[in-house]
Length: 121
Image 1 (cartoon, rainbow, N blue to C red):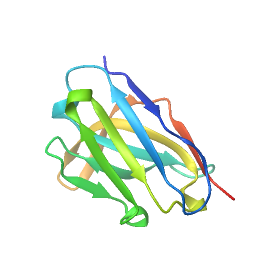
Image 2: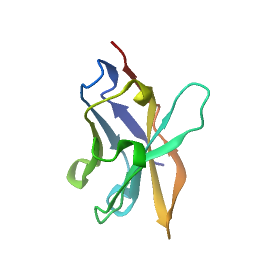
Image 3: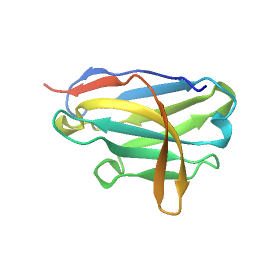
Image 4: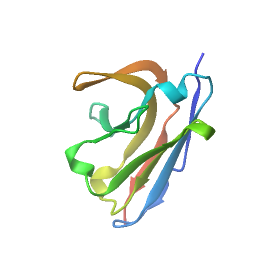
C-alpha cells in the first residue's frame, strides 16, 4: 500500500512563491512517475506537472516557466516549486503516483490528502 502526504500549501500574494512537497511510503516511488494535480472549485481536477522515474518533466501550458517539479528518490519525495503565483493558481493541490502511456499520464489510485493553495492580495 502506498501513502502520499503533502505539505507546503498556504496563502500567498500574487507574484509570490510556495514549495509543495509530497512524501511517499513504499518502495515503488523511485520507479514510478509522479504527478501534481490541482482542483479549483467547480472545475475538474487537472494535471499540472509530472516527472518520470528518469526525471523527464511535463508541465501544463499555464504553469510553464513558473513551476518546477523535482524529485529526491533518497527521500521518496516530489516537490513542486511555484513562482510568480497568480490568483488563478488557487486550488487544492494533490500529488499522485502513476505512469506515462505514450503521451498520456495515467494515475494510479494513490492520492495525497490535498493541500490548499490560495493566491490573493
